[in-house]
Image (cartoon, rainbow, N blue to C red):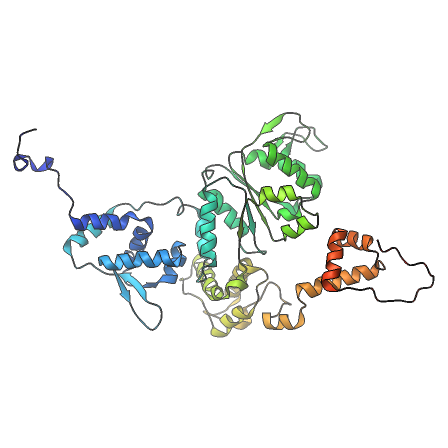
Length: 449
């Protein structure tokens, strides 16, 4: 076609250069987050959302969301609404016919569903995100951990969502197509540890009528999640360490070595670092499982999220029971009661409390009398602080009680407390403990070793 003027080419074969507007629009929606926010706002043309709501919806940090909505507003497809509170953002029809056509073409295309959006655990975790950015920071840690096979230790109190985080890491990783095996170490006595983790051969013990693969074998190419790993005995810790080092094991009663390729995620609500100092957890195993740590905040550390999460759980209850999403609501006094409680069970307890309150509430409004906490004899945090000793006070009192019960024999006291004598000596100095002089019936003093 050399030598033929461009104007003489058929229209179908001419190369049409994109306009500057088209180039800018394609660059705008090339970002997955900008594209997702634009689709979200376009699907809700009558609504507007503040940055915090968008942060919670998409699990992104404030700066990322602010940059995206600012660029969308600058292009003329999003409007900014200033009011008494934080500014809100909503969809607006662009003035330019060209941009309207580009927007229509964009909305007609099938939205690309990201790997993250396909994860059920991610959707569950997003429900746990409120207005506090602590959980968004955790989300970023999860995304980082999912990119490699590094061992992860999840730290957090009971009911804070440790298993949800573990499943997220698995579902966002390259191992997502393989199995996720969860083991609760707190419910696994030493007598069952080996058979549960390694499996057993037929006839390995009474009742072993057939071969059974263990959790390690089932987690091959996938993820093994050890919940409450701090409850493992020293013997079980040694067996686990060997598997982590060799990546091979033998079934109980077998003599064939089985090679495994798995990713380890552990979780605990115990102070493992203190356990290491007290010789209750192997130091070499600690460094194996704690290559990358993720700490989940307690619900009291993000108290501003309590009403947000309570409303979200209430909407889910309504949807699950065939009611409108706003079919039930909290009275102000009931919401205040939720804020005053200190939530020892964290998110799990909050969700259970909301569901039970919605069930027991006879009308549309949930009253304070409808709210029953899982820990019925617990009091709001202010009253609890007045009557409950601090952790240091409780530890000091317990050490004194044990020392007095063994007549200040430090070797026996250390054995009762399940700590080393070195740790006991350090605690005695730290708390300034001294044995009270007592009259003795004989002149022989008890051993103080």
